[in-house]
Length: 594
Ligand SMILES: Cc1cc2nc3c(=O)[nH]c(=O)nc-3n(C[C@H](O)[C@H](O)[C@H](O)COP(=O)(O)OP(=O)(O)OC[C@H]3O[C@@H](n4cnc5c(N)ncnc54)[C@H](O)[C@@H]3O)c2cc1C
Ligand SMILES: *[C@@H]1O[C@H](CO)[C@@H](O)[C@H](O)[C@H]1NC(C)=O
Ligand SMILES: *[C@@H]1O[C@H](CO)[C@@H](O)[C@H](O)[C@H]1NC(C)=O
Ligand SMILES: *[C@@H]1O[C@H](CO)[C@@H](O)[C@H](O)[C@H]1NC(C)=O
Ligand SMILES: *[C@@H]1O[C@H](CO)[C@@H](O)[C@H](O)[C@H]1NC(C)=O
Ligand SMILES: *[C@@H]1O[C@H](CO)[C@@H](O)[C@H](O)[C@H]1NC(C)=O
Ligand SMILES: *[C@@H]1O[C@H](CO)[C@@H](O)[C@H](O)[C@H]1NC(C)=O
Ligand SMILES: *[C@@H]1O[C@H](CO)[C@@H](O)[C@H](O)[C@H]1NC(C)=O
Ligand SMILES: *[C@@H]1O[C@H](CO)[C@@H](O)[C@H](O)[C@H]1NC(C)=O
Ligand SMILES: *[C@@H]1O[C@H](CO)[C@@H](O)[C@H](O)[C@H]1NC(C)=O
Ligand SMILES: *[C@@H]1O[C@H](CO)[C@@H](O)[C@H](O)[C@H]1NC(C)=O
Ligand SMILES: *[C@@H]1O[C@H](CO)[C@@H](O)[C@H](O)[C@H]1NC(C)=O
Image 1 (tube, rainbow, N blue to C red):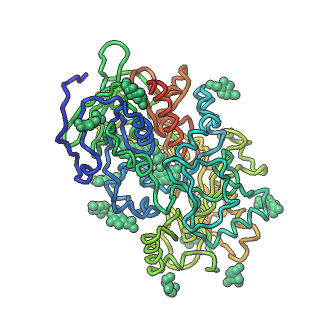
Image 2: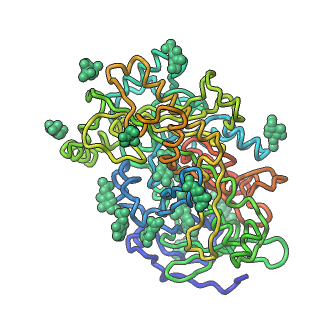
């Protein structure tokens, strides 16, 4: 083990001049806590731990400062606008065997705030049953919905929508936080389809019930979306948790610095992983007096564990990495939501924004409105209403498959009724230059497929092999077909009659389930929700990487707090990650009596 004298880094002034203004260069060789990754989860730890002035924290982030970065400014445009910039990890999956061997772009945030700086900003906590499954899986009631719920409130500050509309009946204030760092909101623009979606919930509340609040623990039905766009701007973890505390003298943030591995600082006895090697123009080492907290996300956390010798020993040895402990589950059990879209065309342009969105003056005006007042089309996420559904009793899918959903209140599928993309949204076809369209974006909520993250090299800068395993379990394909049927039923309800909707494009030709299946295989993409690659579990469970306190099993001084530790997939991940990180911070404080 490398136990070299430390290199001190006063001169590091890391990469970008902008950083020096707000984030001072590191000045110590050891800190109480070293957090790896200033992403969604990492910044929660940083904020909560440095609230105690006696605790020193260094956070090391591979990406740059997000503050003022042009490509991040218009929140809704960021995910699409960043695909070829240094602000993302431009990962690609391995060929997906159940998707005609296609490879998929698999971007993650690589900037302060991590993926919360570049995502679509939906704020969804998921169903009660999913957290209760975490508790069951880890054997720790502390992960049940009821135990995690107070932490969910801690991250949130629900603020009125930017258009100031009356939100009575659109959410339940009793299930929201009002003093946390992340400003959430209902969206502040209306779309022509909103009233039709709501009418559908009243003409057929059996199949399509209205649900007043998607974040109560019961997400079933159709709800108004809640997003982290309070005041019309993106509230990433950097905006909410990190920038406001940069003045704390017990915190240091180093950006443009890439952690290459953790070092075992005890050559005998139980391994102790409190050394952190990182690269920022040259190599450095720092030490944690209390803990290293890995928060590098569901791809990079297992990669770093394996680079550090914690993983499947035989695989690590074959790459020339000396194992520290054999932990076969590192990188395994990966889950992500398969995402798919179906499109209908309408001869009636009164309900869709396609014509407006083709009008460059309209779009420029809308952008200008956002720039000047943070209102209008670009203040939101392009969607106002969405739904989570269980398969109807008429479906016979469970005569063939075991139900992978966590319980009778957990959804099978999610349908987003894209309004901004009433306009067309397809993952396969270009946007047509004429016509009016409705799109249903569909996801399988509890997929049965599992994938993996594996090292391909001992070089920390080589991307790992990412295999979400999309649709490798036949349930997921069957579930996606059912999702299409539910969306089709939805748009067949009476409120949609005037639109005279017709299936469009490849969907028009897919007149049988077999044809739908091949369309799905040729178009499914990622919802960017990887998780579970260092999952939590009971101490006796060798398929778990961390225990229920999120400590890495078999070593000392190392905790994981990010989407990797989830026992199974739930919701869109950022709100669950905030809740896990808030509880993670509480566990750290408890462990060290701070
Ligand atoms: C395009 C896109 C859209 C999405 N839309 C939504 C949405 O609308 N709603 C929602 O809830 N979720 C959404 N998600 C998912 C959600 O944003 C993520 O699942 C969540 O933010 C992950 O949090 P994390 O803390 O686990 O990882 P991240 O936030 O990704 O943080 C990991 C951090 O660690 C840093 N890092 C990694 N490796 C190293 C290293 N070796 N050294 C130093 N630093 C390192 C990374 O650069 C990054 O900053 C979306 C994701 C994407 C990519
Ligand atoms: C910080 O440490 C000092 C000295 O040990 C102690 O008096 C003080 O209470 C501590 N503060 C906090 C917030 O723990
Ligand atoms: C898109 O990104 C580029 C470069 O990152 C930036 O210059 C541009 O302003 C961004 N556009 C929008 C609309 O955010
Ligand atoms: C990505 O950016 C590089 C250099 O900035 C450029 O050469 C390349 O064409 C771009 N690729 C895409 C797909 O935009
Ligand atoms: C990722 O981006 C880098 C430069 O930022 C480029 O060299 C590389 O080709 C890109 N890889 C993929 C898979 O797009
Ligand atoms: C996918 O690739 C594998 C391995 O190369 C091959 O055996 C298989 O036939 C391919 N499948 C399709 C649908 O192309
Ligand atoms: C999880 O639930 C199952 C089924 O009720 C039960 O058999 C199992 O013991 C539970 N596991 C834990 C760790 O509580
Ligand atoms: C870094 O150095 C400054 C100036 O000496 C000091 O005030 C600060 O507490 C140090 N930071 C940490 C985290 O030790
Ligand atoms: C479009 O819908 C509107 C509103 O329901 C209706 O008045 C109009 O007749 C429809 N037009 C067409 C062409 O169907
Ligand atoms: C384009 O949008 C502008 C601004 O909303 C509007 O004034 C104009 O009439 C639109 N043009 C067309 C062809 O619809
Ligand atoms: C509600 O929709 C479902 C699915 O299309 C259908 O079976 C049912 O008959 C509808 N109920 C009413 C009252 O329209
Ligand atoms: C639909 O099928 C017809 C007849 O086979 C074919 O000409 C057309 O290209 C198909 N359309 C799409 C979008 O696949």
